[in-house]
Length: 235
Length: 224
Image 1 (tube, rainbow over the protein chains, first blue to last red):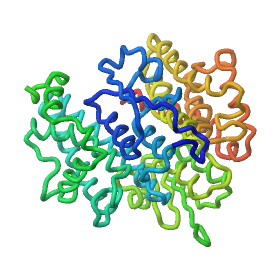
Image 2 (image 1 turned 90 degrees about the vertical axis):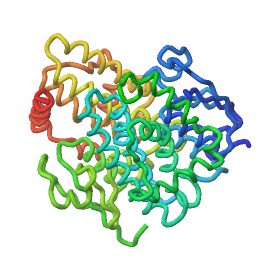
Image 3 (image 1 turned 90 degrees about the horizontal axis):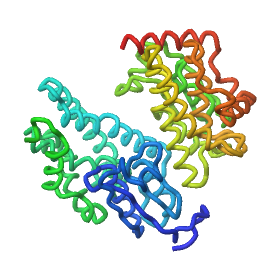
């Protein structure tokens, strides 16, 4: 380790403020693992009232926050890109071609704006009608992501090709919440017939050495969902 | 890069999202064909190129379709490497991206949509919230001509197209004063700097027409 071409000192201490159930935190941990970056993980249970969180992210008071030396980097996709741009010796997370990069960025924005919103929508829906709508939206998202998987993977194992990349990380981090919803709604969002590519990709993703050590246990996530979401489906 | 690049941009004259793409293309000296989309009328071309979101801007480069304005900006920066838009340093880059997101999401929502919807009583609170958001930008500008330092960069293009040359026209129409030189000396200085830059100036929507447009959009926000 030492100085990278861009001048940053990668020997500087790395800390990550996070919360174990958060898919956004998970993204950043996978990225750090991929690049073999040693870091200190600090569990912030109550981020809104945490002095560190408020200090490093006064704008949103949210985790994840990566602190590299004394520099705070905020927002999960920003952090993943920062890790990719700072630690250059590990496998690239974003592809090198500008168009492929734009595609990868687009899908992660889509995942945040549409998938995650629908996942949340299912969890917090107050009426059956609302829930059905959110479920339909999420199914639509899965359909589009299946197509994207086929296009991006080109027959290889991941959205990123032979190794996990930006979309794998962005979407893979949502698998925990999706599995929790599958359990409670009885709906199979990732299905061997409707989304065969995604169906097989899930196991590969979970087995990846950068993912396996940090993917939260589904049982624990289910418990967490029960406590957090006071809606009927989680009883 | 191809021998002859074919670049087409679908945009709307009043949209800060498409105006900023024009700024970037002009900064890079990239010739392009501009196709004006009419608000609320999704042309067949738009539906063909952006079937998922049906929104502008859409950039078509040698047949490749790129959407989402901030993604388009990064694409342009990576294809045409001269006159860089994003900072070179990864940390500065992450700050620029973070604040750009703040501008497009929060400043637009709070500073325009919520403000348009607020009644007399609620207005002052929303103005204060907007000012708090813009203060983050104010702090970034201390000792700098632009967010990008000595020259216009990513955050200048995003924040410039959105705030002084879009949302502020909404404020004008509403008769609300959000950014004053007294409260925001750096921001005010920055706007003046921006207005002197040729390729930025060329991409500012005409004022009167734009104020009228923003009034219309404000009305839409109010009626839900």
